[in-house]
Image (cartoon, rainbow, N blue to C red; front, side, top):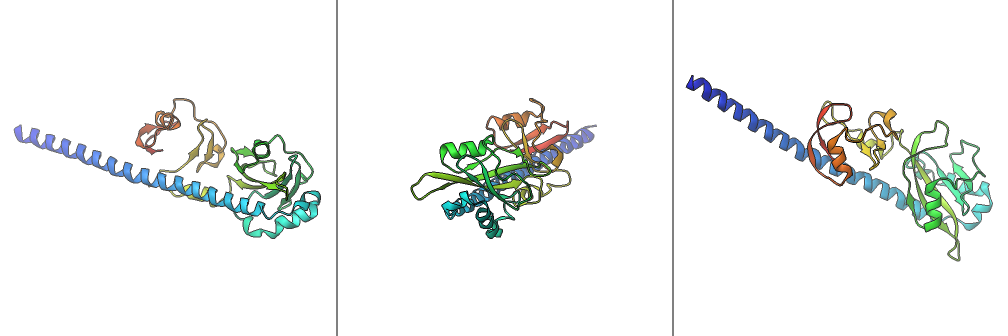
Amino acid sequence: VLMIASIVAITYFTLTYFESTTKELISEEQFAMVSLFAGEIDDKLTNMHDLLIVLSKRVPPGLFQNPKQALDFLKEHVELHKLFDNGLYLFDESAILVAEAPQVTTRVGKSFSHRKYLSATISTRTPYISDPYFSSMPGSHPSIMLTAPVFGPDGELIGVLGGGIDLLRDNIVSRLISTPVGKTGYFYVITRDRRIILHPDRSRILKQDVPVGANKLLEKAILGFEGTDETVNSRGLYAISSF
């Protein structure tokens, strides 16, 4: 009886120690990977925004009165079309669309003053990265817009250059989170108001389908927590999650 009790005790403590050290190792590696990918997303967006800002300084002032020349200018910069896969845009100082490339809609001449990315850029005269929104492009894909103000020779704001990123396409931003984690793990990006930006299940993008309190660790992350712990997600699955 003593031998059996000893073996059971040793086995229990061995398995408990093994489980604890395994979870600790997974947590450290997982948090390091999440931190790396989060930094990569920041860097990619920053670099893309910097390219757009540089191009905005090369926009000739007269383009905003000549839609054809404005379109030709956007077409010249094909190197940016792969980065901004939801199009390049020129808006005048009143948020009227002057040109878009590729030209796939008849929106030229319409006002986009209702879009926050334009009103914020025009009012602050500074570059801006938008919240996710549904594009008015065909298909109405979830997108984000990067903007840069365009100034005239006297320093007055004469327009806005914009570059759109389609959140459903395979681009340099969404590709970062497509890496699988083990057999069932995955990455996702979510805003503080629980709006999903990037997720392997593309049907969930731009939805707020995580009820308050459904994932207690996510609630902590929204309040500023950074780290790894066990949790139950909004689909009822047990997981070791890192934020």
